[in-house]
Amino acid sequence: MLRGNDLVTVEGLENQPYLAMFGDDGSWWGNIFLQDKPDAQLLSLTEAALNKYALTSGGRLKIEEAINLDLEFLKDAIPGTEIHIQTQIAGANRLDIRIDIDGQTFGMQWNPDSGFLSYSL
Picture (cartoon, rainbow, N blue to C red):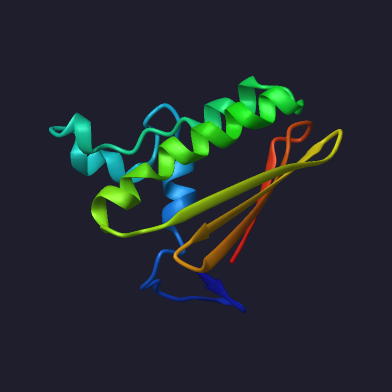
């Protein structure tokens, strides 16, 4: 994680939503260590959904469903984990994504025109 001009280690869930949601074709670099365990590789549905569905009410729901499926592994890995996801179309070219994992909130903004995603903790 970047703090000021320095890289710092992460000891919590800060990277988990991003890693789980992006790398739709298995391109996450960590999958190289899991080549003999295809079931353990991170393959996301969210990245593909963001690129596939228009920012309409129906598209928003499909994107939200993909996010839920991508984050489901956290519930399996950490019993009792509660995840709440809220998506909102904030304009013709912006989708706001709010993810709450056991009280820790993560925010994302997706711009389909530029393909730009911002991520905040």
